[in-house]
Amino acid sequence: MKFILGKKIEMSQVFKEDGTVVPVTLIQTGECGVVQVKTKAKDGYEAIKIGFESLPERKIKKTGTPFRYLKEFEGDVNAYKAGDKILANVFTPGDIIKVSGVSKGKGFQGGVKRWGFSGKLSATHGNKHEHRTLGSTGCSIPARVIKGRKMPGRTGSDRISVKNLEVVKVDMKNNIIALKGAVPGRRGTLLEIRG
Image 1 (cartoon, rainbow, N blue to C red):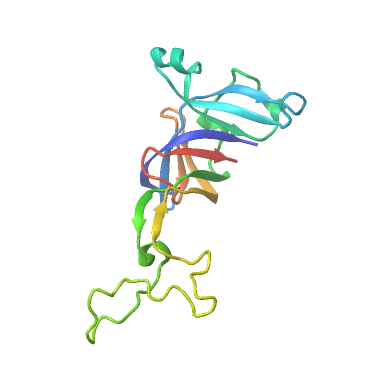
Image 2: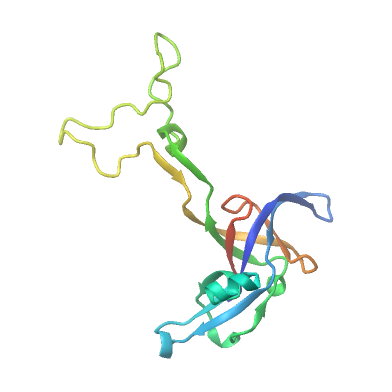
């Protein structure tokens, strides 16, 4: 299993040799270090803990680890040992991968934006300030709002995973991976990339 951590830079486009345009998301990966290898005998499960983005010396003393982010990936523990480095070239163009991250937070939103409701009433015939309202929420029996009813509330900031993304290009000089399509989050969002 292949994996790495990275940060979303922005969306761009890449031109193929035949002239077709491919929309891509650029991800800055950098150098990830293997911090710990967890085994079934010692920890009860097998995983590899890796760190991303080096901290300055003054912060290392405070936290005790040289990395800003630490994440665990379950996989073949025999392939890595503590101290190994994982670089962008772990993936090659054409690989199909899965990307996980936290989506953009949109705050408190109404039912139209949050759930895609059409709005309660028409735009004409005496309708005033009711275009994007929720409408009736309860029912006569059992005379209450049923649990799980789609209503206004906090939207976004959820953990999202996008599967079947294709690696279009790997820039080893700048440690950038270009993925076909969109990934969750705003610019600077930490992403987990699995092969």
